[in-house]
Image (cartoon, rainbow, N blue to C red; front, side, top):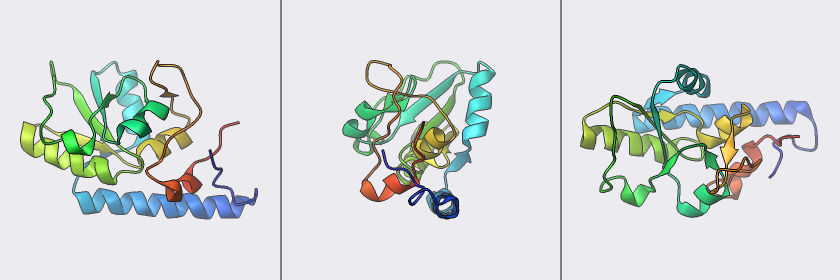
Length: 159
């Protein structure tokens, strides 16, 4: 896990977080997905509303750490995999930062005819805001596998 603090200088960490916010805002706009923030998703989960979380990363990313109770739906399977959506759940896709999940959300909306949201900022924003991440066995972990090493600088190290 790499700290986005640039040697401990707070202004460097703030600069990285602002850069990350702009990148994720661009993803939300470019993909045309319905964004949902970490705070909104957390509130919805507290309301006991049924939420279906779809992790649109690759398996090797998922096994390191993912949102609790997420279902793996890699990009290659978005157009074909059947989804069991009993009732009227809130369907949320996520990836590292929002690009793959935004594309998946719009494709799933078209295919399924329902509203699908993309987690703005992806698992990085979830993790940075203290969200629970688990491994394959459901054990809490303090790490995230990012799309590539370029994204690691945006993770805030947990102490």
